[in-house]
Amino acid sequence: MHPDDVHAALMTRDPAAKCAAARALHAADSAPLAAAGDTPVDVPVPGRPERPALVHPAKLSKRGLGSPEGRAALIHAIAHIEFNAINLGLDAAYRFRGMPVAFYADWLRVAADEARHFELLDARLADHGFAYGDFDAHNGLWEMAVKTAHDVMIRMALVPRVLEARGLDVTPGMIDKLSQAGDDETVAIFEIILEEEVPHVEIGTRWFRHCAEPRGLDPDTTFTRLLDEYMNGGPPGPYNFPARREARFSEPELDWLAERERR
Image 1 (tube, rainbow, N blue to C red):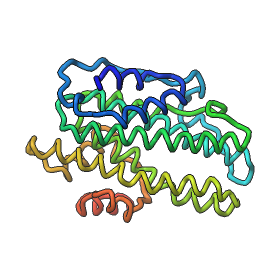
Image 2: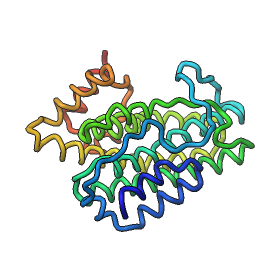
Image 3: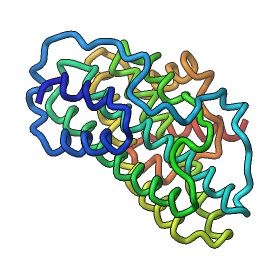
Image 4: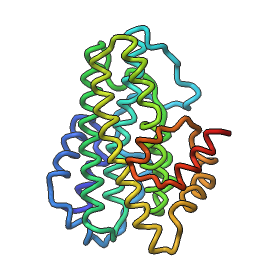
């Protein structure tokens, strides 16, 4: 495997082809990526289909879950997150050179997992009579990828440990609402995603600390500093403390989040 193979998957626009490419890369030997010495190219816009239209988050329509269309809109929003997460996993494996082999294996596994999540959600959208692209979406996940493309430590801190970890916080509430609406099929998919996102966030934790400690940086204080510097302190609570603890957030980090939640 060469970084160009990962870049090709990253730039693939068709969702089905991207999912297949992510699985193939995960099955391949990632060791050559650790030995790659060429310079990655910037990816201001990854491969994605023409739709959905990307709008400011404030312009996204709010729909209740009492109607099939409202539930489809929620499924679409999570499918969009998972599609972006495929690109984020691929970009981590492509962009950051000189890391251990396990780093590349981890992020290609994440990309393959996210591809499977996307396919589950895409099929569920079809059950509701919709397809990926039928609702507007936003570009926040990839915008943060661009902002953190210069430093693997910052990427590990802010994408898996903040943006993806947000899913750990909000998914239980979505599951409860879908259960109340009687949508057991979607609940089952969301439960799979929630369970499998915990190790994805843990991967971010592990590699963030791997990068911070050799620089002589305290991971706990560095994490909160980066939240302040890049994200105005990060998303507000409530936080899913058991899931974050399982994803190896440290007790000082959890204490900091608990204090933020009380504000």
